Length: 391
Image 1 (cartoon, rainbow, N blue to C red):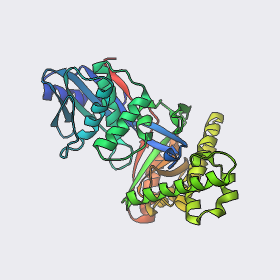
Image 2: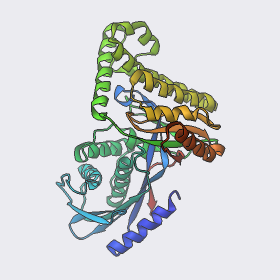
Image 3: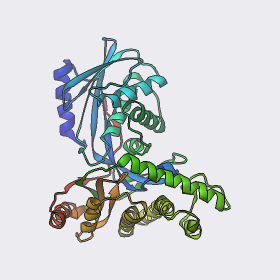
């Protein structure tokens, strides 16, 4: 089992706190974004992966008429009602659970309260979506305990609503879908227009490193909003000048962008080029993975980061330095920023047999270049959310 030590610790703490063993234990992983940056709201494509770090959720029924949830690292309990629960202003970590349970109650109401506890090991500060892992392990466990039937897209939307309406964090569906749909050794390819999801084999010869240079996020919300508005403005322009329907930038090719970009403000044109190019990189990447051409696939990651740096301008000095030093490290096939940008982490595609030495070399080279530290963790595409107990 992935993260056996975390699972064992959770069971011990659950027994000590509640005086019983759980009826159900679920697990959900964090995620990485591999290709397809800022394409989700442009109705495009994304390559992501569930990872080998995640969160366990233990639960059983109670006769208290309320729900009780404990964060296993803090050993602090929050109680909330079976129906009509609202977001809490203290212990705000509980809102991810409260919101998810509220969404599931709309599908099928609970007939009893529950006693629950969660514990995970998703590294904090890496942008690996520990929040989606918590939402999805909550959803899986509650569905199992109360015999609720819901498909992955429904569960992802419930998690998204919990994050938006209870935790106050607007997000797309990428994180939840990646956590739910992961397969060991494979990438998750999502079409954000149709929400069609498929898995693409990576093979055992490569894995990922996640590099956190501790870059501060600066004006993230405002920067994100201006990028999104530029994409919408560009899509409206292309809808007027192209001879076919354009509902979003997903409908525009790079050839069409090149032929018509002069009609746009130069900055808006550059912003639009990034998701358009990312969509084409995801589709090209799928073909390369089918052929087993991992070297060429890695080059797409480098191209993606360069587009982020020069066209979308959602990178930063720290992430640029990480990507630059990876190009000098043996075993590295590609690297790019992961997630929204403006800080956060970089994801590195590396040969599995050289992953450990590459991680050390990247950290050393980054420190030599900048005088600062970069935290590097090995990441493997892994199994998505599941019920661990009962087997």
